Length: 271
Image (cartoon, rainbow, N blue to C red):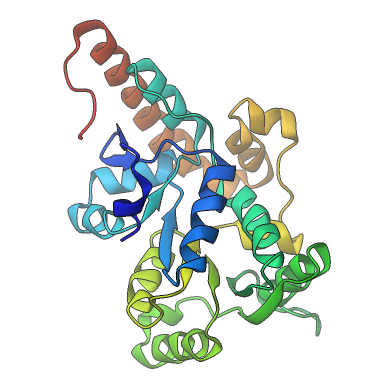
């Protein structure tokens, strides 16, 4: 694992330990590892991921195998700060997909894009459109492959083997896996042994953002940690329960525990 090379002390937030790194530092470490022939796995937790990890020990153990864990959600930054610990900045997967591609382009790196929306009216699917946009943005970046697997493919052993075989055959240096948490993490865990020199980024909706199928919030909302509010306004029926009934109470409890720790010096999160 990359951890032995990073020499950084992770910051506990909820039930995960988060690397105190900036986006630029993540890119630099990934590129340095690739130069040495070492692969790895980046997890970018937000509040929803932290909530799911808190109630699922097996999932928590799976994510414990990641080489880099960086905070996507602003509440993780706030919680660490309230507890008296430092995380320098948000590092969203939706930003990393661009900055990692930029860095890889300078090395003529090979990327595979997995996920996105299915094709409609004869148009390319979201994975191919995202891959094409990245290639246009960063001359020198090589597309090892792109694939939009059908929904529920991972419930079929045969379909799962087919998707894995497609990625393994392409031999990419970086795989962007945007099929949703925790399905993408389970797929990455399955692929890693077959591609030890490859890096993986579980990036959720980032493939859809790059493809142009979903528009990101305005930069001001992103900086304020309110990107979720923009997505809720766009997809209220799908996201209201998750954001308002599940994630919001969890975030409030997380921040309260962090403040309690600051005032009493009792453990707020797991180490």
